[in-house]
Length: 141
Length: 141
DNA sequence: AGTCAATCATTGACTAATCAATTATATGTT
DNA sequence: AACATATAATTGATTAGTCAATGATTGACT
Image 1 (cartoon, rainbow over the protein chains, first blue to last red):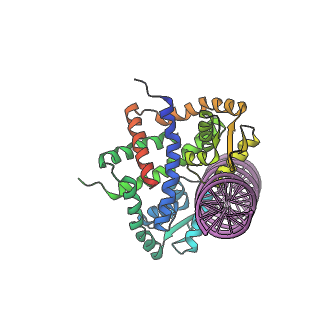
Image 2 (cartoon, rainbow over the protein chains, first blue to last red):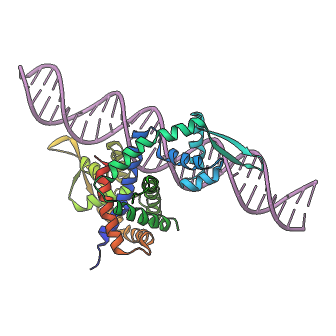
Image 3 (tube, rainbow over the protein chains, first blue to last red):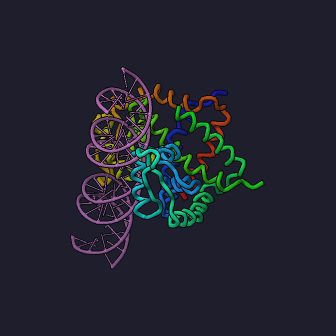
């Protein structure tokens, strides 16, 4: 039995819509934008991170990264300095204040995920994660 | 066996990122923004549609709908008039030019979906669609 | 009939992303 | 050493969305 194109096609917009909705919900519950949160994820896992590494990790363009970092810097969640080994590059480091903010997001994030996954089995969520990763890789080719 | 929070949490940003990526790919291949395409989907299924119905269908706010319609109107893909039965409301109707544009998007849309679903079984895609719908409903509560 | 409240659309101000152009630095070739 | 090219970050202009305030029309109550 063939699957209708219509059914397949609807997923495109559903993904867009869901992405938007999650972005809003996350920021409302945590007080931090999902993108900036994701930047803090990488920053909290490493001593220092290059701006270009951040760019790859969150998959938005360089210009947007620069602007997000400016805001994170204003809030004193990160510090930046030029790489002495290569003055074109910028090294980014999370501050104690940034780490605290990052941890304080956990309850809000949990709320968002619990609401989202409510009534859906763990197996389904795991399968979802795997499939989304495949789609994501395909979408970037 | 418990699933790690980390694994669950990563899906949030993955969804956001994937939604963004799909949005870009769609517009590049079809020449029409995914949101405006989705508006044409509803418009091509009905003789006339209320602006508020469009708003519900595409799940963005009223203000954004107004602006999208302005653009669609400039391209002469739709026409608008006040509802004579209720002058607060606006009735929207797709034009022949709009229908043509809508149909001309099909090949591009097909390209996007084929790239996206490449190497993934139909069963997985169907399961994905079902799960996404559940998540979407949860996200709106 | 006249006012008050509710509803739908619009506008303005803001945020987050894109792309294109620019600047600063580093690298490689003659 | 000098110049051309490549790379990293920044800035400016544009698009798509949000929320809050306003305007216009309708409906309901006295």
